[in-house]
Length: 222
Image 1 (cartoon, rainbow, N blue to C red):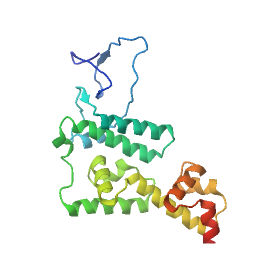
Image 2: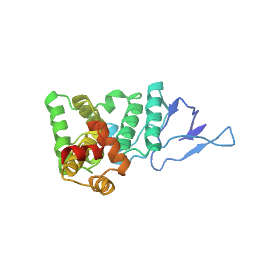
Image 3: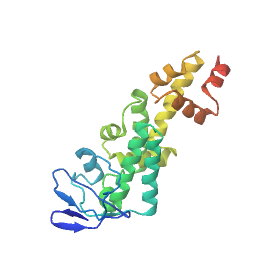
Image 4: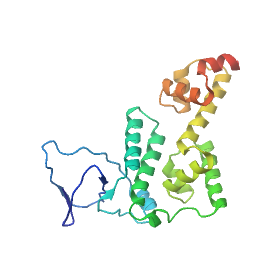
């Protein structure tokens, strides 16, 4: 049982909830071991971009559909596997926005680009920005294009068929291929310099993109 602003609410595995800065709350657990939950932290600007400009998120429980719970578990699985930080951030933003859409879809959709030209401009803006700086996170990309990270991610995926994080990885793979074609021998160094988590991450992404290992590509290209 969670008590906020004098109101009690029952929490179970079918609901999610938000906590706003400075909010006093109390939890009463019916079991000795407490609770088991996933916590996602948002700064105020990101919260406001997802909630129609208002950084104060709803304090009542939000329903969690089976599909939303599945996406939540996919996020956890990706984190346990040591997934790319940009991919994890994009998943977390989408998960939060989906939870808010259950409350007021119109508010979450308020900053959505309404024309095909505007959507194409967003996609091109992302591609251009990532060419200039592959490490630029989703939140900064969205701020530079004056749209919420959630809408930017959704528009980009619908237009290209893949996420912003995946596009970032594809660009990194292209840089790696260029280096391999130049005779690069040290895969660990290549992974670090191009921005992969480690050598195995480099190998997974390159093989996913090309169907070949970095060593096989190097032998074919030089």
